[in-house]
Length: 208
View (cartoon, rainbow, N blue to C red):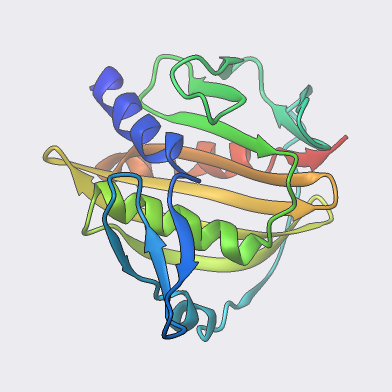
């Protein structure tokens, strides 16, 4: 279960930027996929959807005492070293760090870039990429949040691949130093079990 979940999510995340957009001679936007196929972009439709702002304020837990800094931009991640292990990403060339809740089927990734990308575009990329591997992938929840004083988009995407239903939950953030995707993932049936740990993990997103 552990290896399969990690492999599935790495496959989804590693091609986060693989799809490219183009404009046809009739002015229509299409997505060019890495396998040579294309499809019409639905970003115009997505952009019309209003994203609500959460009324809650989100701050890092006091036990998240270890600060892990990105070398690609100014993002940083507070983690609880008693609960979470981390290492430089090896399975995923797009990620900077990989995380695991020790002894459990809950994992995380930080994907950091030095290029500034609007956070709304980051979430569109995440959904497009998920759909390219799991056609039934869909957004379960989406909202703006203020996390440690920084405006992010919170996104939950669920889908199925190789008979396994997965959910990944994450914060998407961007500023002049670059863009960041900070996500946790697990089997869909385990989300409620790990909900508290997921929230604590994600709320460690900060700036150095």
